[in-house]
Amino acid sequence: MILRPCARFISTSTPSSSRYDAKVFREPITDREELKKPLAADDERNFLFIKALKSDETPTFYRNHVVDKLVRVCMTDGRKETSRKNVLSALEIIKRKQYQTWLNALEDQKSKIELSAFKIVEEGINNCKPLMKLQGVIRGGTKYDVPFPIEDDEAEFRAMKMMRDICRQKAKHGETFFKDALAAELMLASQNEGATIQAKQELHKTCEANRAYAHYRG
Image 1 (cartoon, rainbow, N blue to C red):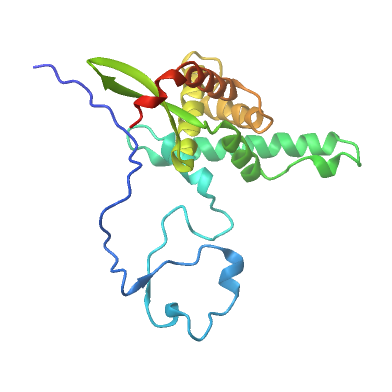
Image 2 (cartoon, rainbow, N blue to C red):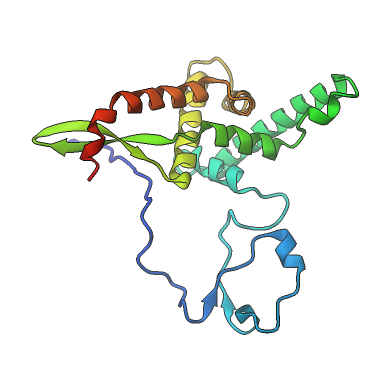
């Protein structure tokens, strides 16, 4: 018997149930500025339980939602620490390059140079988010690639996945290490350039070419 690897898909559906009883649990505060403010006397959170924070929702300054999600997307065979090391190394490369650019820049240009690697990653991933996706729909025994609008969370995932696959191809062919490819791609994407931006544009062109099948969405 031949065992075939099964495909893995991202779930975009809302969970039907939760371990937290809606009557006694409330959402936690994830914004640092909100945490500094005292709760009002009639606020329910004074006497009800608070849900546990998700790993990527912590308000600490050294964690970032986009970076944490990128770590998970870049993970292979459950080796999360290896993935985290690669992503954080890419952030360090970005930081060093930006700081060197800042040192060599003229005084009136220094204020325009972004030194936060987190902001560069956020901007790069945001620029790579696709607006549409292609999904197979079968009608009359024929499969059509139908363009569908895409939710923000899935768009973010697809942007990271496209970037990850491009960086893996470069590393596989020996052009560079994964961390260096990821750092370069993130910096280019933050300026609306690079292979991931081109992949997004190609996807949009294909969706536009298949817009005649849009009536098959229902």
